[in-house]
Length: 206
Ligand code: ADP
Ligand code: MG
Image 1 (cartoon, rainbow, N blue to C red):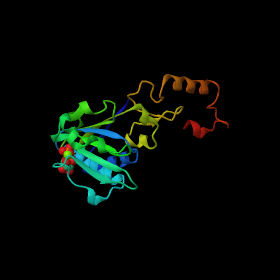
Image 2: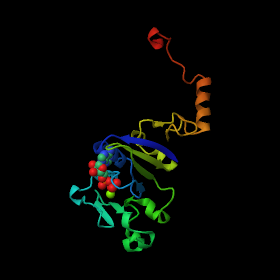
Image 3: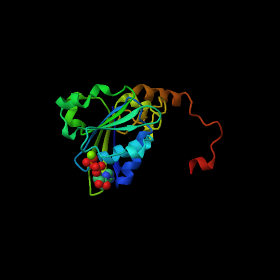
Image 4: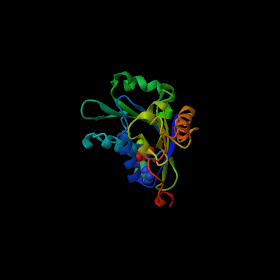
């Protein structure tokens, strides 16, 4: 798992992060989204929809509907489910199986229907840390580490110099993805792979 925390100072920053996230999402993703009332879950989903190029006229509050679908170019949908008022038993009513494999599903209040969702699905938990301050705890499966632009989602994220996978300071071999990658880097160093191909100049030491 890849874990990191994102802090936003106002709704615009949350939306900006949502648009960045949109650039990383792929058809078929299912995202679990949690946080107390007023945390900014719907704000985030709207920004994701916008970042995906959804028609703004489709954007409406899901408070009184179970699932809100945004048409996306070219063919797939963003399905925004608000599980606030539904339980696992009601999922049949929702028509869980009518979603296409290429639909992108974001579930607000996912913890309320946790039993019906894959426990390893990406998870976003928004915490209210001040009047306008929010912290988003992000947990992503390891399979996401290779996705393009993923490192833009967190200030402390880097790509492992050996494997090109995204790593966070919480990872045991940071900035490497694994012990093997760390050893491979050490080997490159010892065998002169990082040698400068020119004499050292005073500016190098400044
Ligand atoms: P939820 O869906 O989690 O109940 P909403 O997105 O509907 O929350 O509402 C969040 C409210 O909090 C909005 O009125 C928004 O303007 C406000 N807000 C204040 N600061 C932030 C922030 N940093 N990120 C997101 N929303 C914020
Ligand atoms: Mg909401």
